[in-house]
Length: 285
Image (cartoon, rainbow, N blue to C red; front, top):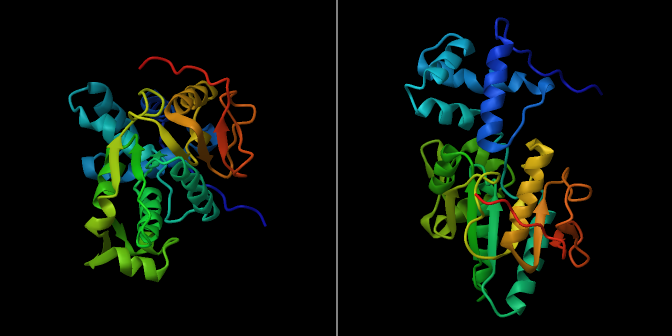
């Protein structure tokens, strides 16, 4: 079966506008938009055009380049960053994280988990549910740090507020009722869940990792959008942030093979990666 065609870019959208927005996204986040996916720019920015009462992307370019409104650049980036996510996405990964955390606990310490590129928070909240339920049997809940380059995404993750569509994606009814309450047509995470996750804005490419060493780092479906130099820098930062014996989880379509010497496939946990002895030093922030 042939894949459905991508929506065409609207007539009249100039190549200049597409180039400006692509360059802005890469400069701010390291993420690239391939030329065959330029339709995403048109689609993603339409709500911002309505909010700003503009008719065309070229008018938005003019507003950006005028420099009179510092918020417009952030709004454009927030709109363009890919925020596709869901609860318990690729469920087997969560079983592997449980095993990785158990190894850290056996060493006698409280494990630390970093969800890098957490989007609107479904991944770290899935982990929080998993470990909170396990804690009912007496186990400690790991420290969970979640970061994203988009402040808008971080705000949503902190609030833990999701639409009916979002809450149903990957979340069984039992957990939905246990950890969320209805508020109008939305579902909101209960405070005993959101307090288990620390959310902060962070740029993987341009900023040093959150302080402290991590036992598990999840960065799934983020590296797909980065240039080769940006990927190399991110791997170096992960290598600097991960504890010896710690593990890295990537997306199903991502790998360290041919990308970095800092990590190799884990022999203990098939599907995860572990740091090698060749970990490069990340560039100074």
